[in-house]
Length: 376
Image 1: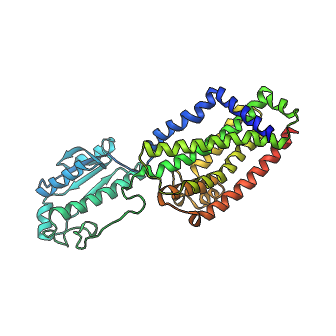
Image 2: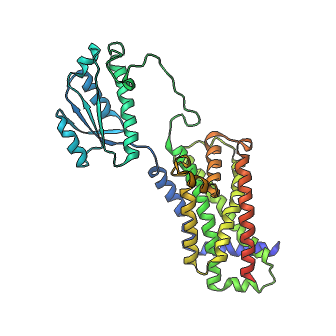
């Protein structure tokens, strides 16, 4: 035990002296939490919009006002000529052009059928689809507000008809629909992955490059003592990293931590077996720090893209969904989000815990065997 303690002390001293590693541990996570928390979002806002108002009635002016006041649209052009719509989209000046036809208000009040046209730039399918849905909802709300009793039910398309039944919608777990509440826990999981795997991979390879690993191998220290003494500091740093991320999420983004921190710590400890095992496996396979960095980054790209962090797994092709089952970050991403937002317990997350245990056991065992072979 004394030998392991001394190796841990030596490891912490090396980390303290390495400014680049200190930056990776403390500076990079804060920067990523600040930037990614605001940048990574599937929300679509401030869509450049044009309204072609051929009616110029109180109803059409109300629609223009609602579009202009919406955070989802920026009303950049208003025209009364239909031919102005297509060129504006072609030039990239607007993404959506809403056409309000002549005598729209009069026809609606008389019960005549009215067709409202929406021209959308389909180059960005995600923005166009979401924007179309936003605009459709805005029109429905506008017609309900303007004249809930005066709009004839046969005058509008089905999706724009005045609603006779009032509905009340409740959002569970994230009542304000703050996207940061969903993304920040995912960023914390990703930071825990990249820091622990990268530091453990780079730390061991660096010692091999400067020759200190060979010096340790000829000392009376046993291989398992050397391995444990070098792995534990990175595990401790991983927990410090997670604590920094959670604290930052609370203080900066004011995200409530609904779940139990003890449960999160247990699952994080299980997950660290996998990430540290990956770092150990990389360090046992790479000969230089550049190789270790490349191999770790290759895993990071795969883990990030296939975890559901940015792209929903349900939207992926079937073969990609099957590949994602081989990604341990996928399961930890579910764990940290469920605990963070839903106050989930072990009863709800035991399946992810079992899978993470299997991943950790297999990867860490294989990595340990590879490390011992390399040290022989």
